[in-house]
Image (cartoon, rainbow, N blue to C red; front, side, top):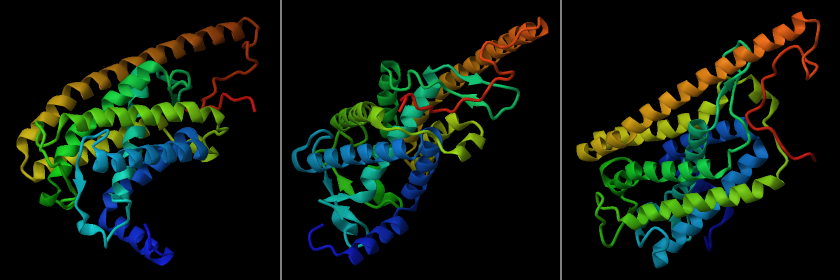
Length: 310
């Protein structure tokens, strides 16, 4: 960054967007999903934490090999896109939306679903447990699993439009990727989630009003996860890495079937609970009473409701 003027900074940033439009498309999808889910301030916090942790990890790894193992970036695009201290700017951005997508998919898999009212829009997850230990552990697992698909394909960037941007001095056992890389992803994913859990308590924020009109908000983050996965599997097939493609299907086929079954079952349980609740309320009102909360209908709660009283 030394000697970089403001004009050249924006030129390189614009060049980054032109050179890596798919990364910024994923980033925009993440921003939309995260803001609708938890508001602007928490989204900004998650973005800063995610990028900061990822950039620090990559900076250390290209110098001392921690936490991903030693690798080197190839500065072939240093005059076309933004690099910071030897790290391509776009590379650290990927960790942000992958961490958020993994987290929201873990929430969808582990937390109870509920549909409130008769409309299909009123679909929500509870706030409690979103940063608990079970969700945390599954988030890290999902975060590492998607890199099992991504990193070998990125390593072969010279065979698609990514370009050859990095290499390992000592190729690893998994399609050229060392096991230390996946250990590093687990460390980075854990660090992002721990820091966010510690800091988000200080942020007072709720989703914007327009988000309340959006249907099925809990599916946006998990949808992003599978969009990225589908993109990478498509590239894997296009470059002729059929074995790697089959490995990806072997991992995500059973996992996706299990997740889908779990989600459908929990949604049905939520519908049954809703039906029982409505019957109980009707019985109370027919008996001349009023609902205990003083309201005659079930409200649709926000996906993320601020628990701070101030």
